[in-house]
Length: 77
Image (cartoon, rainbow, N blue to C red; front, side, top):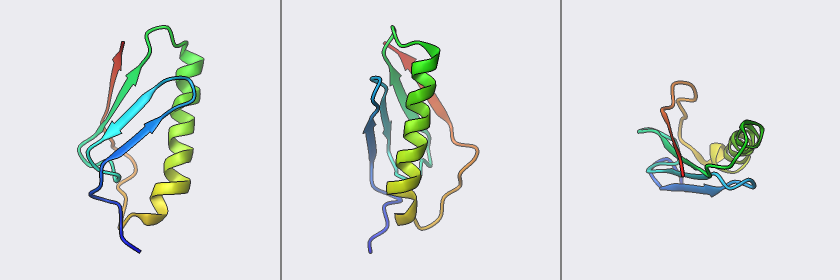
C-alpha cells in the first residue's frame, strides 16, 4: 500500500470549516478556513471531526506521524 505522507490533504467539515494541508502528515502545518458565523461549539465539533477523520482514514496509511506540535493557521471568513 502506498503511503500518503507527501500527498495533499483536503477535508470539508460538517459545519463548514475547510481544511487544507500540503501533506497528509501535516508537516508544514494545516490551514483552517472557518465561516465567520460559526460558533465556538460548532468549530470545536469540526476540529473533533477532523481528528477522527484523519485518525481513521489517513493515519493508517502514513509512514510515521509527528502528532503533536502541528501548526494550525485559522482564518475566519
